[in-house]
Length: 119
Image 1 (cartoon, helix red, strand yellow):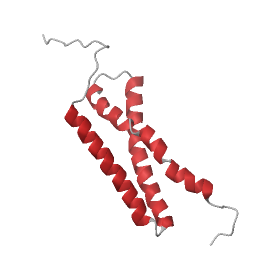
Image 2 (tube, rainbow, N blue to C red; image 1 turned 30 degrees about the vertical axis):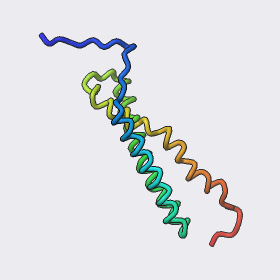
Image 3 (cartoon, one colour; image 1 turned 60 degrees about the horizontal axis):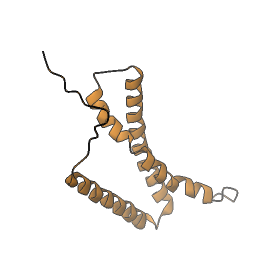
Image 4 (cartoon, rainbow, N blue to C red; image 1 turned 180 degrees about the vertical axis):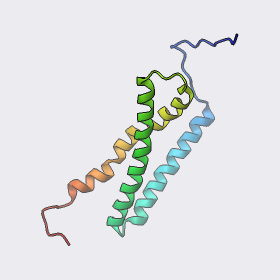
């Protein structure tokens, strides 16, 4: 008979200092890459916005797919997917960041004059 380890709900999992440092470095590299891409694409703003929209929608679809997977597994109370579900929950945790990054799409849509002549 296999023994089961009981974990209390009050027990919290904390990551180590190396993981926190790596996470901060990855965040810094990501912000620099985003700013570098905007700086390099500033000459052709139409292409910049198209490329930004493509990358944003690709990332959003992965996050929403992971959220759908987690939701379906919770709805059917699936026990087999607990380990895999943790990965999907981590991927779906990017959605609040994408909500902020969506301002890069909504902003130009609001600021562009759609009542003028089209080229």
